[in-house]
Length: 250
Image 1 (cartoon, rainbow, N blue to C red):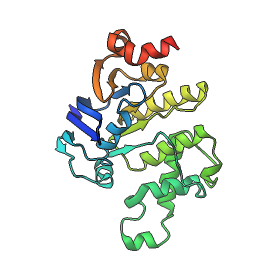
Image 2 (image 1 turned 90 degrees about the vertical axis):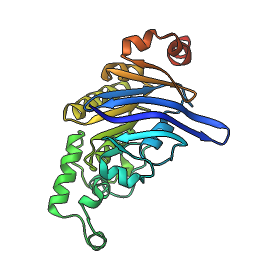
Image 3 (image 1 turned 90 degrees about the horizontal axis):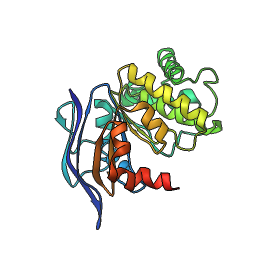
């Protein structure tokens, strides 16, 4: 069953077309990889799915419902969460409070509740559980700004998980990480998927993509040039030329 349907999605900025007639589906409980060279339209695609940008043409359906005109917070409440390529936690807040803030309406469901202390024992326990879920235990009161990049990436995922998403969009989660950290992140992505979360992954790290995704969509200059399993994608002539071939040629 398709959790997300993209049909003829098009988005332009002035005279530059970032996405042109892109179409694909994401089935429940799968991990779909989105790859392509810089400027291929990958992040623009995420921004359209999450309501940060309004497409010029085309349809996005989540759980069978058209998302056109829905604000990012409305889509988040419906079950779509994302991370960003550049992680920006609240640097002076603790790890725990970063997650509590991301919990939003679950921690403070009304304006009056938002003005009162939201760090209830139940809310703190839930936030601690989310941090533990991504491999961050202890030091819950540590300021987020003091974390190394690898842990900031995990905190970013924990904040997304605070929305209890059905669909999680990860924008280059292994970017800037050491090889060992990337492998650990790979295991976390697998674990989250096994827990029932559908994942769309933008990633330049080919071992990560090939190791965790059973299906890939390839974009080049805003156009979908290929879709299929990793082995087929690696042999696809247009993909070799547009992306994999460039990397292989150094």
